[in-house]
Image 1 (cartoon, rainbow, N blue to C red):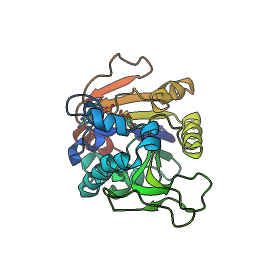
Image 2 (cartoon, protein in one colour; image 1 turned 60 degrees about the vertical axis):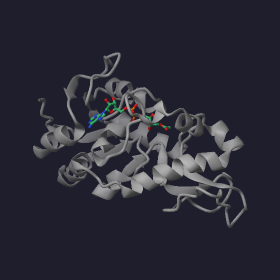
Image 3 (cartoon, rainbow, N blue to C red; image 1 turned 60 degrees about the horizontal axis):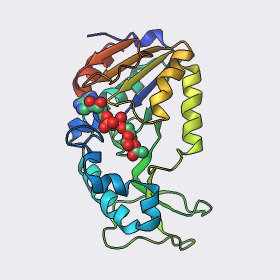
Length: 243
Ligand code: OAD
């Protein structure tokens, strides 16, 4: 297995996907048993469905919220939190996740860019409303919650298909990629943009690029210098141990 010489890289970007949360009992999106195999879930993850049937969106994501609130961080999340503690004070580590489960923070990572939002949070659907997104453990199966400030409908604070990524989150990721000299993608199929293009940006900036995943990327992505195959919850503790 390749060992990463973390100390050689003063600016590191780690991108995670659903694979890092599999050992916490959460499903991936694609592949056997993945969330998108269920046509209802796939349909209710669309921005159009939010507009036409917001309660159906809450029923789907309320159930997913219940499962992520039950889940605990696993060895992959803990290894990345430990890496943040261990790397040199002069080095920078940016953790960017496509996951909406909040498990990196639950494991102790502090500075996490949640590119697709957070299912632990609810927000007002009115972009001009002053109410910020807030932590919410309710599932809202029976009724779509209404904003106390502006009376618009409240929704899960995640990015649905057909919606843009939050501008500030995308800019922070891009800024980190522009400076990075090590890019590591873990547990992601590399199929959803903008994250799928991050490796190309990192390579363009001259970074060393590593892919850690249970299975090879299909088709293989030529921008990765190194591929380490295996479960993230086994590989990450090993590759972080030498940091
Ligand atoms: P995917 O479901 O597309 O890919 C998960 C990857 O994790 C697959 O390549 C699996 O082989 C791999 N995997 C499974 N178990 C693993 C393990 N224990 N260790 C390491 N790898 C493992 O999930 P993402 O790439 O995260 O977006 O999906 C990206 C986005 O697509 C999601 O954030 C979501 C979805 O549509 C939105 O909903 C906006």
